[in-house]
Every structure is written in structure tokens, then in C-alpha cells.
Image 1: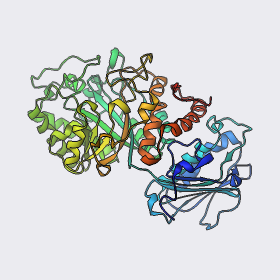
Image 2: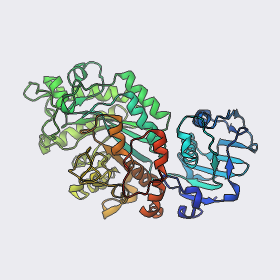
Image 3: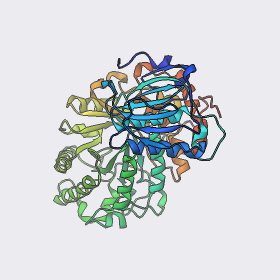
Image 4: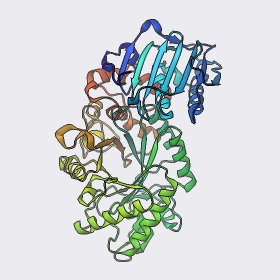
Length: 507
């Protein structure tokens, strides 16, 4: 089978409600399949395949009212009226996350090389079904899947969303809900911003004041909060079950007032500053010359590495105006060595490219005001770059001048602005330099789940498509019609999304 038999834009009805856009799709209306009371889910052998089948059954049973029995076997030919999930494909282009989906009048066959691909394929099936599938209540809806064929796999291996739980703290249930929403759009990384000037959000053995003092407040002076090790482990496992990797961030050497207020030995003058509940940046710094700084950092990284199965530990590195240039370079290189000593790779905001980086490290580009210089500096060191330009990808920015939530320093970002860019714009980096994309959501103005969702959706969906879909097949006119179809789905899911006037929402 060819990797890309043809352009996805010719997919027709089969792609009408799909975000991200598949690599290839073709429609056969005469071959559409309707899920009925006799439909079963067939699953082939392989670790994890049964869990994906259960996920699909758990999604479909409440709204359809059907039993949807799961059968496990090695059948080479799936029985009629079944949804068949199976590992094994002759298409090497699918990689670890791609899938091959065939829908005929007799049933559905979903194949993938790895279980992650089956999971992503199930999200596509979910989006092809009527939005009533999200209501979790029995419905008389006709559960029709448009007939045809999809071959799909991601453009980039890193498709991330960042959530700031430091400026305002969000508990485990809120983060789990966001993980569920992200998984529907094939996002595969959750970057958790766990510390900042306003709050430290993860318990660390041997450093109890980080949470007892540093976790006791937030922007505006609220009560703050933090994750126990058990809480964090639960989040990691919840994300893993949805094929999302958690990347924890402890922002250093700046954005550290919560830590400095907790332990005086981290300050060059040996005196702790007051806790901070404002919104300014760049005023704090760990004491780079002190040995205590690296004892602290080693202990924190050791705990994070033990709790985090993913490959990266993010140590920030942005807006270090209170750290001298020489101290900054010294710190980054020592921090990189500590992270690597614990078996992980360093990730940081792209300012870290001022230091000598090892090829396994990753730089995250955000500062559009440097016109791509920090991304280019990283790429010239053969370091991979995650693209998250603030003027397009920062979900905390207002949609327009009338938006109540959000900030304005990077400019208003409407739905089209969040979609109509590409990591290769401006020639800052080459395709081979880019690990992926990310959409950060900073929480200075966020207090509730509804706040979070209002700024995330619909823009997060656009960033997800940039990370997954072929560049040549993306266009705003076709995307906005597919995005409009997400409105009823988000309504059924109870998501408090922004109804952009740029989109003709279907409900």
C-alpha cells in the first residue's frame, strides 16, 4: 500500500467532522455502516489492544444502549457486523501512532502497527459518529459511519499542550478532564508547569516547605494547593492510558520566588523573600554560585525522574532577567548534566540555547519578539525544537479586545490566528529540526474549569491539527467547516468553548 494514496482534501463526507485532518481519505457512501444491537467489537492479540476495545465499548454502550460484546481472537477475517481492532499492517508509514481504517456496509476494520495507533483510530471513529455519542445517555440516534478508507499518521511526534498549575492551582479531576479533551484531538504530550513565582505544586521528599510554604498561595492570594506524589502518579497514569506523555516543568533559574520563599539557603543573601501573588516576571533567581542550589536541583530532578516515565524534564530557563548572562549559561549546563545523570533529557524554553546543549536536549521556542533567533540557535546545535510561538500558540491570550479572560502582551489570537501558521514559517528552522508543536495555557486569569476550556477551545484544536496533519493539505476555509462540526460535540461534552464569529457553528 502506498503511504499517501492521495490528498485528504478529496476525502469528501468521511472527513467532514474530523480534526485533525487525516493524511488520506476516500468516501464510499454506498458502503456506510450502522452500529446496531447485534454489533460486536472484535479485538486481535497484543498487549493493550483489549484496553482500547474496552474504551470504545465504554464510549458506545451508554448512548446506544447496545451490549457491544467484546470478543478476543486471532481471526484473519472479521465477522459481519463487527468493529475489528487489530495490530498488524503492511504500511510502514503508519509508524507508532498511525492507523488504517476501512468502513464498509459489513463492518469496520481498524488496523495499526502499535496500540497507540488503534487508540488514535478510535478517536477518529468517535468523531465520525453523531455528537450524541458524547452525552452518555441513551438516544434513538442512528449510529452511522460514512463508508470509505482512511490512512493516517502524524506529521510530528510531539503534539503538546501545556497547562500552568502554578499561577492558579488545578486539582487532579480538572487536569484529568483536560487530558480527556486533548486525547480526542490526538494530542500526545501534556506539559505541566509545576512551579513559578506564585506557587510550587509538587511535594518533594526532604524539602517539605516547597509545598507547605511555596504551595500555600497563588495569583491574587488564593489558597493555592499542590499534588502529592500519589496525585502526580495518578495524573501520569491517567495520561498514559490515553497515550499522552507528561512532561513536568520546574521553572529555573528565574520564576523561582515560591522556592526562594520556602528555603533561605537558595538565596544569595540567605534571606527568604515574601511570598508573591502578583503577575510580574523576571525578578527572581536561584543563587547560581551556591552549592545548595544544585543539591536542591538534584533532589527535585531525582524525584521527578523517578515519578515520570517520559523522556523529558523541563527546567524552564525563560525570562531570567535577574540572572547574569554568565551565571545563566553556567546554570543551564549544570542543570543539563543533572537531568542527564538521572536518565532524562533536558527540555527548556529556547533561551537555553545560549548555553552549549547536548543533542538529546530540546528547546521550546516561544518568544516571537526574538524573530526566531533562539530557535535557530538551538537548531544550529543540532538540538530539536518544539514550536510554540506566543503570538499564535499561547492559549492564554485574549481572542479580541472584548474577551474578559486572558492577557494581551502577545496580541489577540482568534481561531484563525491560532491555525494559520506553520512551524517552518520564516525559515527559522528546517523540518528536520522540529520535534513538534505545543499550545501553552498560562493561568494568571483562570480560576475554574470553565475558564480553562473557554481559552483552550477552539484554538487547541487548531494547534493539534498543525502538529498532526500534512502542511500541504491544511487550509483555513476547509478547516473552519470541520471545526464548526466540533461545536455540537463540545456542547454534548459540556465544554465551555468560545464561539468564534469566524466559524459558522452548526449548533
